Length: 379
Image (tube, rainbow, N blue to C red; front, top):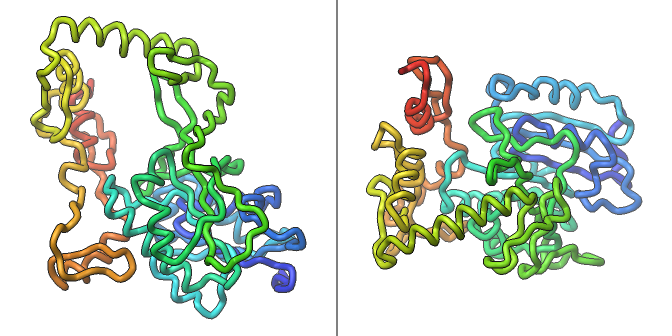
C-alpha cells in the first residue's frame, strides 16, 4: 500500500489497546470522530500497540488474533497500519524521530486497585507522550466512572504542561470492548439491583497550552452526568434521596425497600450511635448486625482470611521523604525506592489460581477463596 500523504494525513498512535479492538475500529472511517481531525484529513497512518507480547496477547484474548489479522491485512485506501507489541506507554522514546498527531490510551489500568499507582501511571504516560507528540498534536485518555477524580487526571495533565480541550461522555465505537489486563473479561457493564447497566466512561482530550482550539468540548464539572446509553430517559426517581434516579421501576422499588423501609426498621431497634466494624476489612463500618452478617457471608463466607486486594496492595503516600520524582512528584524515603517506583507503572502479572474441586480458573487467590465458599463440587 502506498504511504500516507503527509500533507493531508494524520499519524495516530494507540497504546495499551487490550485486544486491539479499538485500533481495529479505526479501519472504519466513521469511527474517526473522536480524534477531532481536520476536515481536510482524509487518511491516517496508524501505529497500533499493545503492552503484551503477541504470544501473550493471543493466549489471553480470544479476539486478538482476528483483530491483528484484520489490521495487518487491511486494504483500505484511507489508512495504513502497523501493529507492534511489547510497547510500554510510559516509555515511547523509540518513536521520537516520527512524532504523532494523535496519541490514544483508552482505559489504562495496572491490574490492581491502587490510586497512587494509577496517578503515577497517568503522569508518566503524559510525560512519555509529549516526547513523541507533534507541536499541534493531541492526547486522548478515557477513564471509567469515578476514576477521573480519584486518579487526578486533570492535576496530572497540568503537571505535565497540558491543558484540557475535551471532556465528554464517551460512546465507544462498535466492536470495541474494554478488556481487563489479566484476562479476556470485559468490564463495560455493572450490575445494579440485579440489572446490567452500561458503565459510563469519560473521554478527555489534552494539548499543549499554545495549541489553538476553535471550540473546546468540555463538560463543566458541575454538570449532571448523562444517563447510561441503554436508558437515556432515566425517569424513575427517589424523592427521599433528592433526585436519585433509576433505569427501571423495579430498580426504584428495590431501592425504596432496601434503603428506606428495611433500613429504618433496623435503626429503630438498634443503637444509632453504635458502629459495627468488620475486623477483616479495615474501614468497613455497618449500621446493624444484619448488615455486618450479610457482608461476612458475601465477602468472607467460610474463609475469614479473604480480604479485599486493596488492604495489601494499596501504596500509602510517604509523608516525609527527601527523594521526589520530577515527573509524577511522588516522594520517597530513599533513592532506591525512587528508582524502583518505575516498576509500579507496569501492569501486575498474576498467576491464575485453580479450584482443586471443579478446576475452574481465577485471576487471583482471593477470587478463588470466594468461589470455594460456594463451590458445589467441594461439598
